[in-house]
Length: 210
Image (cartoon, rainbow, N blue to C red; front, side, top):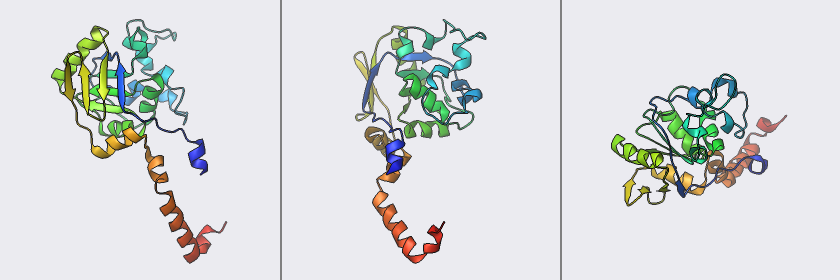
């Protein structure tokens, strides 16, 4: 199918190891993640350079050295630890696109906005909800620039000699493990869709006339 040949396939998510970047700000909304002036594109690539634009760059477009994602090794982090209510505000799907294009494939917070949380799974990002005490423990690994590991199959985070379990809806987990976005889920039913179309064409051919 043409749709299958031109779309960008969602990457499978199984395990991940990275030094986390810690952004201890609450109520980070989607306009902070990717400001509205960058929403003109429908491409999922190229948005990473504008992630957290107003916090990463000064008025002259120069990087603000104090911002965590402008510092090594956090500029290469695949895991972001953030404050509560992450992804609030408008429902723009460009927000997870920008995170993913930057290289972040897991966001850990004590709470997420519902639509952003759902959009993460549709784009191959794992959002993990932990209590504030565990968030504080993991932030110490960011401060020490030490790696943590995430195992989606086992639903656990391993850090040092400790580990913590997290909960993920079984269907959302399956989609991440198998790299299934909404289009891939539809394509799994392509035979049934084709059968339905053929049946409808036989019963109501005028619907398909140009």
